[in-house]
Length: 144
Image 1 (cartoon, rainbow, N blue to C red):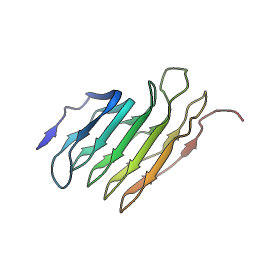
Image 2: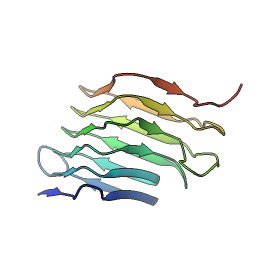
Image 3: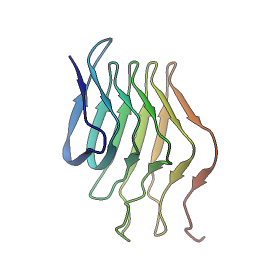
Image 4: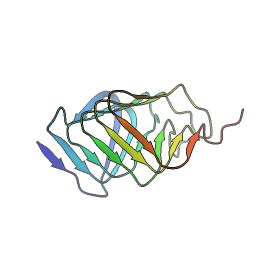
């Protein structure tokens, strides 16, 4: 089953469990809102196509995004990892994993925030693609 979410909506994952949208060669969602993973795991598969902002934040605990199958994320803003937005606190470990034929594209990539950067990961396997067209900002403005 394919679902369409309205633009401007926000999908927030905030817990220790996981949520899966789409799997294999069918199913998924078309979504243009904000996706924010504060804690827990979001698995995007099937024919999912996201075009809103995407943030694996780690604000309230370990955060994981798995993009698999033929799922795509195309965002016009920075792809963010372990940034705990607006909190002024340390983010938790955050992981972005791309599998199968997943395709993630963004104009820039931002890893970390201004407080500290935990051990976090980007994993790419199979025929998956991570396309960052511009800046690759590591550790934000954290000092040495």
